[in-house]
Image 1 (tube, rainbow, N blue to C red):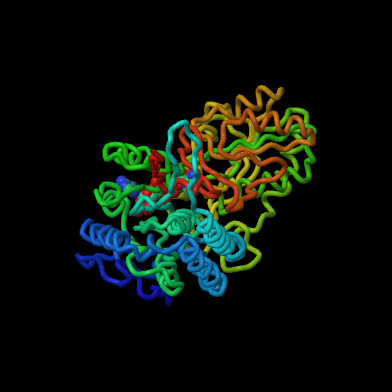
Image 2: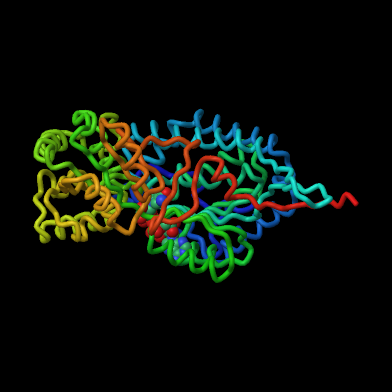
Length: 484
Ligand code: NAP
């Protein structure tokens, strides 16, 4: 064990820190060294039950749902302030836990988390209904209210942001929450539990149960006291979660896997496009659901672009996430590194030409992989069709706009997509035809809490961010008052 110890590293239930009922604990590994840095409590079904009961009691008491949206908004603004005041500590935790470069953790994770709480604080002021005109002799109006207890289940890659993208709108709408973070990356969730309490979120309104998916996650999914499931993770687990929710008739939002295409037309500004292409596949060490790992290039500029990538990509700084200049850190866990190695082997077997990279990096015992570009793969290769979730870019050529769109839409996923072109009409035309929840034109990963994102096809359903997200944590009631 190294020096780091999160205090208290226990479950947060009903405003109290406590050990798991059976005393179980689980190890947290620093992926930049492959070393255990601390342990946290590992929840079992009894702990999840206690957390849901605490959330239910808090909801039914009205100490959160009974506040006005404005009062809840004020507390959520305070959360945003506290995140900014503690930015260094939160970035350090996120970097340690996930292996994120510290610069990225600051600029993206912490900044966005604060922005998200602030955005949903402002939306808390807007929760209202509408009067409806009808031929009835009646006054008909709608009211919008919270759903109750929200189960938030989040993945390993953006622990802070993806927890906030659920907890902030859920709280803005007046719900209470039980959050289960990924077992590999639980630290910022625990930190945020304490921070939310300091900001004035009443006890029991947010509960955090660290633990494994098959035990704590499953217990939460199936708990009859849960009113909504907000899930972000892989398509495989999402499919399972959606089927359990279906059995129990619980509303769900599903933010699932992605495998986005990034299309570069011959009329694009290539220099600018290359920056976006590299950002698209190395961002967060490629562990980005909305990354752009499939590059589709118009044949007239295919060789040129490959040459530029071959020159530029090996120069992207890989290494110790604590160094401010690092752009690519380690993979978040050894199993993710092994998965990347397996996919690169598949790509080689399928005839892919490794333009650069293609090997793991031995450094400090961490889980590092070279940024890798692989050209000339057939479209049916699993390395093209499936989600690699590492710093690997596959590159394919196309001849026509129709072919580019067909290739882009040819995987089961539909989370994000991107177009590089100098032709405005083409940008809109192609954006319209791409099967994706978000399309970026002439850049990548432009994200803001006001802009909804989410998937189509196997990337899920429902939207996070924007007023759409707030609506997903509310229910509408109609009141019709006879005027006779
Ligand atoms: P994952 O394996 O599906 O896990 C996601 C969450 O589900 C974790 O908290 C996991 O717990 C939990 N879980 C596992 N089995 C469960 C069960 N039976 N019941 C309830 N919960 C269960 O995903 P991941 O590997 O952490 O994350 C990577 C995936 O997430 C990628 O596919 C990526 O594209 C996707 N993702 C999507 C978005 C989006 O917005 N669409 C954003 C980020 C990531 P454990 O960690 O303990 O297994």
